Length: 166
Image 1 (tube, rainbow, N blue to C red):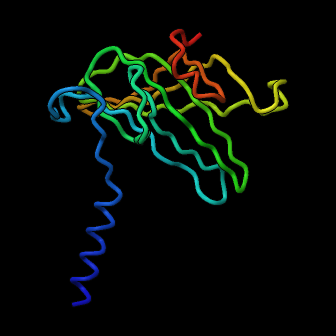
Image 2 (image 1 turned 90 degrees about the horizontal axis):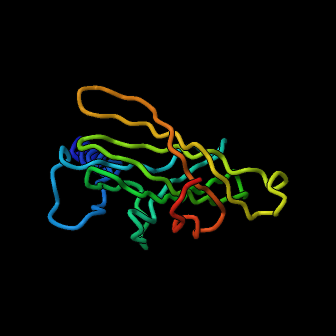
């Protein structure tokens, strides 16, 4: 009996950790080999800075649910992400928008830079800046690399609507 409960608990834990991508394109669901996947999620722990990356905007379409993992059709995409950084009680939100060319069967994981400290922006908590945003890319066959994309980041969600990342 205990073994059965332990196996069930382990199966539920594994199932809960696996995130299915939210479909961010029109039409029927396609197999993973025909779509690109943008991955966000959380990193860090209670003893370090904690970062959560979500996707509130894909190709100019705003999403109320802001998923951590989305699937998109291959091709040119406009990606809007929201990064929430927290360390203890301190919390900072940054929005970034960038253009990327995606390929089928590849996984894209952006790593936004830390927002500038308020003292450096000269505007308190409001900021907007142009950055190079590193994106880790993993494709079938074991290939993995990092590319940098021009991005516009800032403290306001209006950054997601800007067309030119510079």
